[in-house]
Image (cartoon, rainbow, N blue to C red; front, side, top):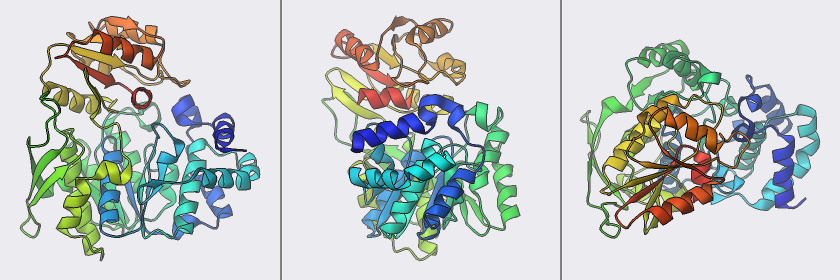
Length: 437
């Protein structure tokens, strides 16, 4: 099989959460353990950092990988889902794995897949761990896929566990309260492995503290350790009020830390929370013997996108008309998106939106501005919510617009309707953003 045929085989044979939803979720680690046993347990052959949470875990993972790369460490990075190419999920020093590595792994283990019947995600985790071990990476940053306790990535014993925050997402799997969701996310906390929580949230902080005590490890909250401020100094895009860089001053709340003056090439202001988490993680890595200077941090954060390939975070995909895409899709993510939209000067807002069909979308729809013009679309995956259904549901919240047969048609319509001083925003789902960019 060539690369295209290999991916078609994987999509057809292995249940894929992004395509079919919760039926692909395995509520145990059995398949991942079985696959990794066949591979001689590669997860035990490299050092790692485990990053979970509801929002920000992808950005945080990419920032940490950029810092480690810049500091001279051969760095693996495992994230999900991908936007354009499957190989985005597995990178070494920012470079996607090769097509041949995917082809070879599948060809070698096709019989194992048919015996074990893993999910697409379980197979991907095994592939990533196998390659990181073979390539002898110095450190790998591993992003949790869904939840934590039963996530396939949770067979690693990392040097550091990171949980960014807790919000409302995947309630049909993780639970319908923040406490239940936090309990699942806390499942990545392990004995004697320090844990950093990005945001101290009153509703769930005790869950993490108690779990850390049970596991006999230390816990810290990045939001207690850092204050950050953003200054708008970056390069302007055609005078439309946007910046290429987020200028940040990070003040330590503890005297032993350094004040950082940073430029981040991810301009969404929600990244301020993630910067705190990254700085606290770097401090812990330094305590464990990693040589990471302040210059390494500054250089890395200014080049996260080029160093790691991160896309879809408050990304300008066109300037005439101004068109911005962002993968924020749950209530907390949308709240941050709306804050950023409010900071952009525009006359009219054109909102290209699509969602998936297995989540309660009412909370998100209730938050969206009623004075925007909406372009409803269905992402091209089996889980995609039909555009007409989305339009009807949105009307209940006073949101009006037309339904389109594809993301591309919706985006084209929005850009053709937008005037010079208007803003086109694309979002609602990672998969909508993937098609738009």
